[in-house]
Length: 283
Picture 1: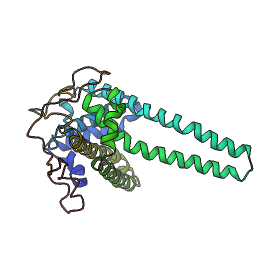
Picture 2: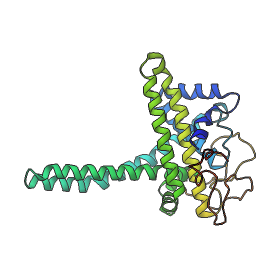
Picture 3: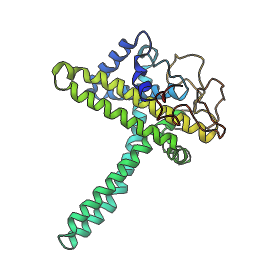
Picture 4: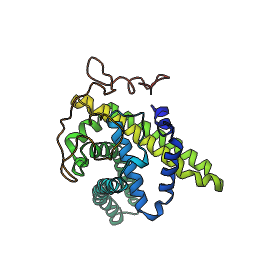
């Protein structure tokens, strides 16, 4: 699975052009707007994966840059929403613990900070699991509200399949971080970091998408998005057509070409049950 994810952006004859453009967009991220464009592209990567279209990464010239930029902004609203919830959830107990330490003996103050730090760590770990699922459901329904839909977030987010995907994506992130650190020792290498980051972030979205798609199908008996007949078009193509902030239904056309294999109990077997095997990432 990790190998497939890292090779995802190297598929196709025009992969050098695709990666070069992705790196350039990220390189100009200090202008802010390109960051939203970059994020919108990554959401399109996940959208393709949710459809089971893992052999053709999105080409920049087939996407509407305005659409994917707006998509990136909308997804940022979801991320910021969870960030606000995390801050509020941790601020009150953290202040109470620290305040209790300040009001008591000095020996309790280090304990108060330790408890606050522990609460923060728990919150960060929870976010590491919730955000991939929230992102997948946001892409599935093309709705900001879907990013906070507990009816989907809980069963999918607590599934073994999705949790394994989160762990694998974390592994990909470590590999890319190490590579970026090594490249950063030279000026030329430092300039190559955005291109590596583009490949790495695509790999993470690939893993998130595969995990969400398999976990969703295990739970609901159908793929999150029906495959399309072609790979072109903007991010608006597909079953979700109700608008920006309106949540959509969960009924999508069943398609025999969906690549997730199942066992007798209806659970995916191709990527997640064989993760320890040497060919675990192949379908």
